[in-house]
Image (cartoon, rainbow, N blue to C red):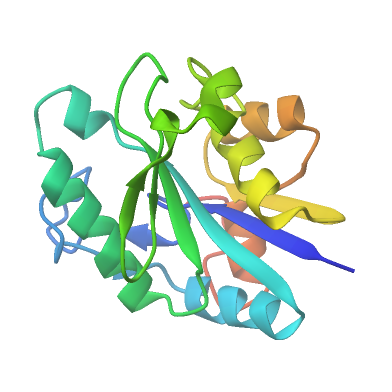
Length: 178
């Protein structure tokens, strides 16, 4: 059975080292307790793993797209179990980037994703559907920490789990807080 684990990034598996609300530069991130162990567990269970993230900091001018893409590559270094990351850097949900360890691709420029334009930004399901098109899973699970994550999973028809419950199984916080 082909299985896919989709994980939100900020507040689900990573947090800023700086103590700020958001990651300020590519190196300003660290794993949240329990997240690396949870990811490894799912990888060992045969899941392909992809990150899903809105990156409003680009659209609002807090970081450049180039730094944002480097930030995702740093995340892949911190979490070797993650295969690739999908990100939407605009408020309108028109742009989708796929980042892996070697390349950064602007997927929304490809015709096979044109039907998803305008739906990439969560709570819309476009990023989740784009990942599902690549992996063609028989079972998927999305883990997140915000209502918009749950809404995206529900609309996409994908099972959802709250981040703190998921991490708690592997040594993370159990009080409902990231």
